[in-house]
Image (cartoon, rainbow, N blue to C red; front, side):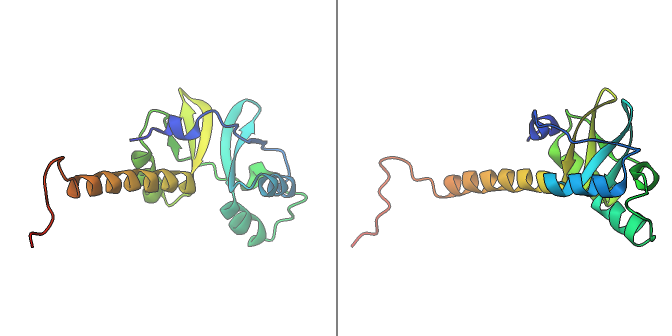
Length: 151
């Protein structure tokens, strides 16, 4: 069973400052093809800004994306994971909290971010491996065993 640490590996985590304007953050997210970014206040993690925040807290609320700091519209109640946790534990936590991104904290410091897509890809790989092993077990034919029909 894979841990969150193996999933995030050594990939770079894209972060933004809470003073950046929404349009600039949205452009960055579009360029990097990511759905959420951790928001920092200097060195301190202060929230997460996601596509859902753009929709509900900017567009639907009628805020000007060129004048609105991301810190004003980010989600500040964070769902977090520890790098040592299993992907299944993290996936369950995400389902319970109805979120698609989880911040990974290693001893209180930002270690990365994982998406539902990341975890589902791992889950599919794990299930495929289990199916392959079960198929091999069910269809195992010991050497020397003649299973041909007798005529």
